[in-house]
Length: 257
Image (cartoon, rainbow, N blue to C red; front, side, top):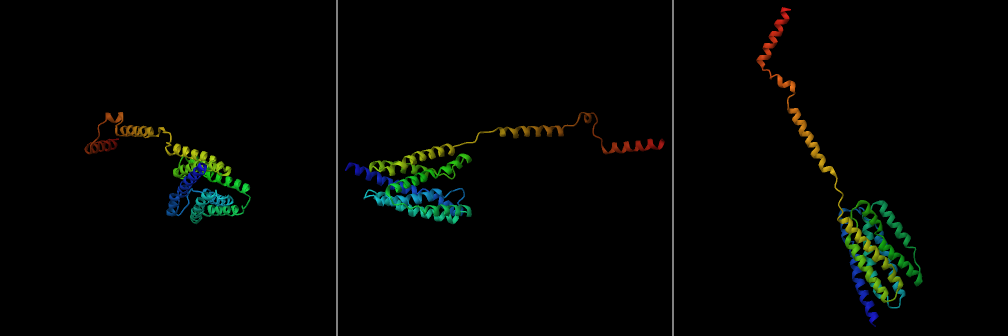
């Protein structure tokens, strides 16, 4: 009895946190709709989440009453993820749109009904959901920017994985517990990566000293240009009258010769 209460408690907590996880990409899709572009975002996390939710619903239906809490949250997840995918396809460029449709078409062929086989597929898709942001993590490391990896999504994915891990242990379901071990680990890695690159600062260079050197040379050049040469110091500047007298002398000398 106590075990059932514990399982029910973790199941309710898992539903609440998972619902928050499903809503975490809302700011991302608000941005996509405003800019009418998917930018650097990818569809794989949403496609994986959709098919994971669908498979978990089917898996839970094979259970005798213990899968009710899996059905409730994954039904909500299917609805929300479908909206995300439709929006993504609407605003994606041609290459991303075709790629998304290909993945959707490929996954539609998966349909096995034996509980053990289906449980293994559910585990695989759940791991894919948690591992889908790995491609974004690679972008984060390469660009040193966390723009396309929201912290809230990583946080709630981790909390969701931990909650469903305990739920799986409580109902003694290996297929529920196993993928959430991987999920908790990958979620923690994502959060650590986010913290590292959120406050990452590029190493300072000596570029700030260069303008001072150039400006110093510029000032010296101006001083040199404005200072008369040593030869010019010996001869005072000639006036207009002096020039006329000198010209008359030169003309007289030429006449005499």
